[in-house]
Image 1 (tube, rainbow, N blue to C red):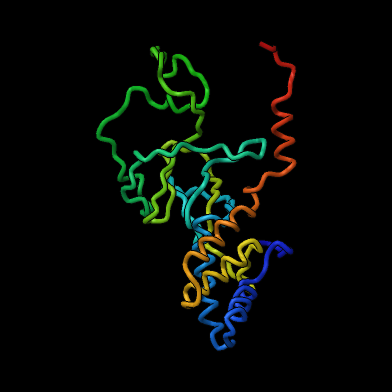
Image 2 (image 1 turned 120 degrees about the vertical axis):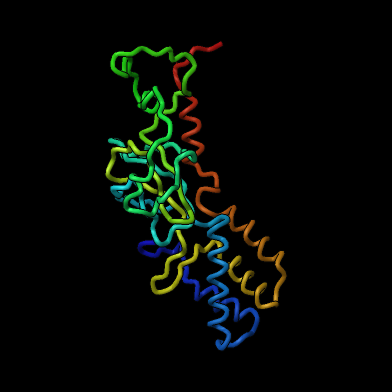
Length: 245
C-alpha cells in the first residue's frame, strides 16, 4: 500500500472502537480482529479495492502466472511508448489444454487451419499479405486494434496467450487481497462499516446497519465523488472551434 497517510487508519483501531462501543473487554480483541479482516475482504470484493499494476514475464509456453494475492483482473495488455496500457483481446476460444504444463505448446496440434492466417489480427493494413494473394475484406472485422489475445484460467491461476504473441512481458491490473504490514490499513471512509460488521457478527447489531454504512461509505470513496477538476475537464473537452448548426 505504500506509506500510510491520514486517509488510512489501522484495522486494530476499528476493532478497538467496536469493542469500546459495546463495552467489551480486550479479551474479545482477537476474535473481533478476525471478524474485522473478514469485513475488509468482503468490502474489497464489492466497493473498496483499488487495482494494483504489475509487469509480469511471459513464459516460453505462452502463459503468465497470476500473482499470489490475485482476486480478479481489470485490465490486461502491453505498455506503449506513451506509458499507456494497450489492452489485449479477451478470447475465450483459446484452449486451456495443459496450460500449466511447460510443454503446453506441443499439445496444441491443430485439426483444421485457416487460409486467412493472421491478417485479421494485425493492427495495421496489409494488402497482398499471404504470398501475394488478394482478399475481398468488405465488412470483415470491427476496427479493434489489438496486439494479441488472452484468456484467464482462474482455476489454474494462469493467463493464456495466443500462439503468435511476440512480447516478453505483460501488464496486469488486478484486484488484490488485503495486505498486512504492521496491521491491515482501512480507508477512513469505511471505519463505521467495519465497526457495524463486527457488531453484526458478534450478534450485537443488525445486518442492515452494515449495508447502510457500506452504502454511505461508497459515496465518500475516491472516484465516487464529483470534483471540480472533473467538472473543469468536461467543460474544456466540450469547448472548441466547431461548426455551429
